[in-house]
Amino acid sequence: MNLLFNNFDVKKIKTEKLIKEPFPYFYVDGFLDVNFAEKILETFPSFEESLIQGKNFNAYKEKNKTQITDSNLFPEPIKKLNNILSSDEFVNALSEIFEIPDLIADPELVGGGIHQTSNGGKLDVHVDFNYMKKNGLYRRINVLVYFNKDWLESYGGFFELWDENVENRLLSCKPDFNRMCCFLTNEISFHGVTEVKCPENITRRSYAAYYYTKLPPNNWSGSHHSTIFKPRPNERYLYLFYNAVEKFKTTMKSLKKIIKNK
Image (cartoon, rainbow, N blue to C red; front, side, top):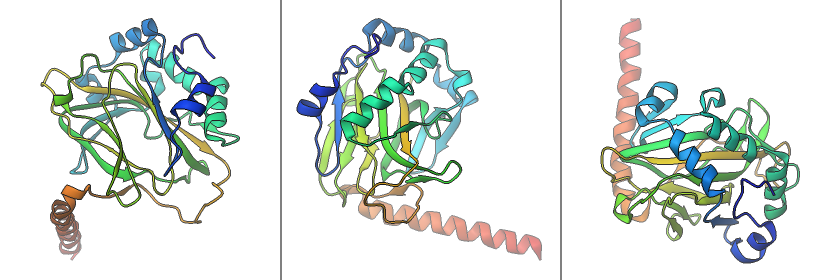
């Protein structure tokens, strides 16, 4: 394995770390060589830079978050990370761990790349889009690497995995520096990020890489879908309210268009 990986033993992950039910997932600490991880942190763009260079999210279900997917804008250490995570060596390792042949790294980093979330931000529980129509690829695996030093539990921003009905939480993972989380994406792999409550001068920083196959999974339903959100058990009434608000806004926009065109 590449020398820039510090703690990525495929056999050990398969036998000791991989949880297989209800869908496969694992996480490892000290994922990258510590000096390499430090260089990535040193060159991580500020939140203000990310607002200019990337895409910004400010909806109820995903807010105070930025995303830079254009690898041409990455600082050199993060370009190197991108190249490593898309290398044949790493992709083949994921194939072996999850027993999925012919995995493909996404060179366009659709939805991936550099992620940052500021105070008050969150990402509600969801399953990802399952098919990339543009390239004819089926989404299979997510990799998340965190770059947050001295992250306190009170800062929130925990990565979570939930069961199919979003009733039982499977994993609650603090986004600690140089920790890597990886999981199979399918119709029941619900996941999200709790609200970030950090000081204004701190952001939650991570890097995301997604992997695909040209052929559908064995249990493919034949139905393509975009991101599907579900509320946590304590959010269900709140979701009813906000969904009603969103429907009202959509209806008002449609009415304005009709009136304008008359």
